[in-house]
Image (cartoon, rainbow, N blue to C red):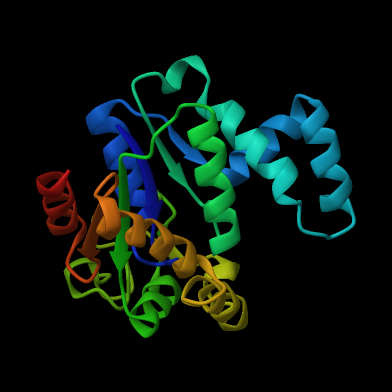
Length: 224
């Protein structure tokens, strides 16, 4: 089962990805991790990518896609994989689709988590981290996991926030890229949706990201 996962920051995409990884024993592959691995191992593609990254430039698709393709062909991906964080625009979606087909690899399922931009931003800015355990869920804007009087709802510990979670300008920038249905990440998701609607070779699943984690997971599992 080969899956592409789409969803804006704040939609719970990472959480659902981790659940799918555990439930189906699939490697959860994130594009950023692929870059870091190739750079740390000093591969030829990693060296080329590092040159662009050091200059503050975007790594060309001609480097990124071969990296991803190589990762998807590794031994742990034989039973399937979950790719998260790529593609980010329609052109990348087309190139990835072509590269996978040339390698004899199919995309079986595309999952898109739907969430209003304002709700997604509030979820990010409302996240609080427990000093005792970062896995204790606390969020100012989600009633089910709202902190108890400013303390962790699970253990009563002190709560902190990540600086990037409070950077509204940075959040808006990431969301502007994701929600752009013409040139952004949604355009790449819709490319696969069109394939699904035209010939059914890909199963396209949309999930309502507003409910709690458990409810979203149940809907996801039921649709796989």
